[in-house]
Length: 243
Image 1 (cartoon, helix red, strand yellow):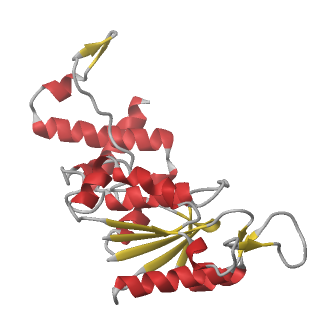
Image 2 (cartoon, helix red, strand yellow):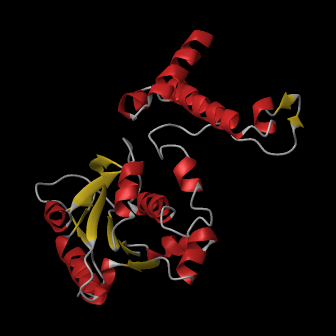
């Protein structure tokens, strides 16, 4: 899968050369291209922003350099389609479902903002707008890194163990069950007996129940959207009775 990033600071994405994503690039599973609009300016100061019409504080990114950057990426892609995403606090909140949807694309183009924001006409150059949440960052780069990592880790071979992605938080709409490893006892806190029993059916039931319990306690709104089975409903009744 190809990830394209339109950013004023391509060097911020050097972190993608480390860890599993670095290995994925080395193996050709993902291809990351970070390009700055400054390369497509015509003045000696490589200007990409200007003061807003109507007055106001801050500077606004001009549409020309970003449009030219997107055109350049289209040419380099050689006909491969892409999906353009604008990273902005005004976008819809990014979710695991979005990461799954993006992971099925051949190419994803992420446009990062800076300063006071985008010229409104830039919005007409993208397919959708995405936000990490109800807060404002210095720029879209941190959000782009989050989107890339959440998406790339769903691609076959990136995690090493593909089952990991299907068992974690939000994979099925619920939070993940508690995990334990050695030692068996740590500062008086023991690993639950069921996990040491070797009874795979009992372990699976315990994990599902604890996943439901954690979701109910921490993110109850997720239960309203999750596809629950009759067994899940029975487990939730057990949890409420225990409480």
